Structures are given as C-alpha cells and as structure tokens.
Image (cartoon, rainbow, N blue to C red; front, side, top):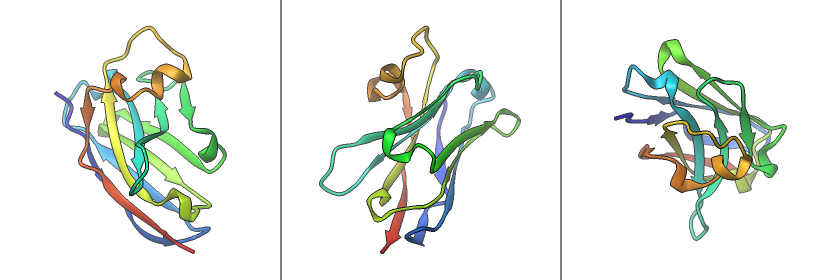
Length: 129
C-alpha cells in the first residue's frame, strides 16, 4: 500500500504562497500516479492537480493553472504542490492521492476521484482576505 501523508498547510494571506508536501510510505512510490484534491466546507470535492508516475504529464484544474505547480521527488517518495497567488476561494482541506498508473492519459481520467486507490488524511489551507 501507499500511505500518503500531507503536510505544509496553514494560514496565509491572499496573494501569498504555500507549499504542500505529501510523503508516501512505499518504496515503489515512483511507479504511482500522484495528485491533489480539495474540499471546502459545503462544497463538492474537486480535483486540483496530478502528475503521472513518469513525470511526463501534469494536469491542472483550470482555476489553478498558472498559480499552482505539482512536482515530485521520487528519491524522497514525496510529491509537492506549490501554491502561489493564493485566493480566498483556494481555502479548503487538501488531500494527497495515489493511484497505480493505467493507459488513460486524459485530463478526465486524472480528475476522476475513483482513479485513486489511496487518500491521505488531508491538510487544511486557510486564506485570509
């Protein structure tokens, strides 16, 4: 199993930056697709970003494009989400997710929660206006 553990959440002012980290327990981490979802109170869970195991493909939800960057360090079994120019609407609990890769490379596949086999406990991001 891959057990994602998030860190790096906190309180930041609008326009500020945070970097979320997700450490995974499994040595075969480098062969898993990784991603981030978020959920704000009273809202549906939504896809944020994902990165293929090979790092050749990244995917972003439209509202975070140009502001967020997903990356991974396979030597450290860690995936990152660099969040810049944060807005109050970015406030949510952010969940790190992991999935065994398959042949589908479309955004739709990566943005679908059912793709992911493993979910972290979440880390809170609060953005003050």
